[in-house]
Length: 315
Image 1: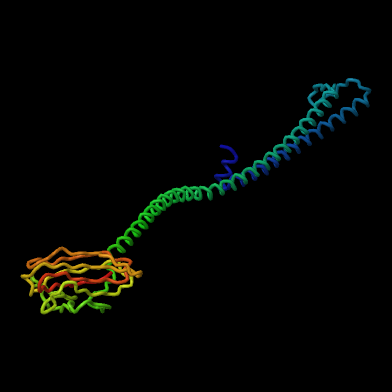
Image 2: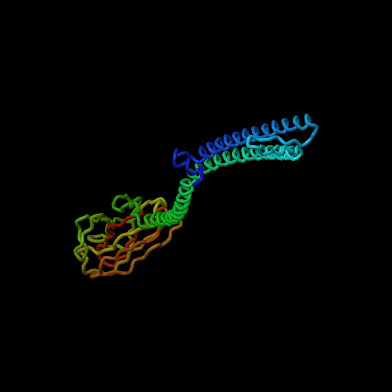
């Protein structure tokens, strides 16, 4: 087990703290080695100095010094060899200091990289959730674009339907009606036209709430009686029902003609009813009258016939 692992287990330190503490331990060990090397070198120099002094004193002669146990010691020491070893040790010490400097630089770089790696790890930890959030937002954005496209399509379709509905409403709307029974005539030819009361019955028993007018009966049997109304070109259509009164269930032929006159006095026949006689059923009609200033209604009859124009109006 490495020293780093031991320090981690003992103190529970972080990576950068462990490296820093190991660096301090290595420096202490190196300083101790340097002290030992220095002491050894100093000792070698002391020995070399003593030996040199002895050699000079004895004129470099080889001497035998007796030992305590009577064994001779050869003091023929090779000084050059010791100097070479000392030089080697100095070079080794210099190389060790150079390696120590490089090691310290590497350790500092390692600590810097560890701190940068820690910072990057923190950034990555913050970035990962943001990336996931970005992915989710991108997917949501795609979904929203699809929804917006569908909404735009529906909106266009809705607008088209609204326009169509407005058109249909305009076409189907009930127009403002001006009833003939509410108007007063501006001219009449003879006295053949009178009011049709709301309770008066036609030849099949119907009554008409809006009433109208009729001609004939009594001495009003002459043909060509007419009545005129001013409409000032405000209306497009004239409608109503042609009927025989209940008093004319057996009667001769009759016809109703309707004329339109423009402001320049030009008169045009815009409607001529079929000939009707006793037994004829009510006849509804709708005619176009746009551009006419007045409308003139004329009765053509044979005999005493009550001819009615009921529930008539303009729009």
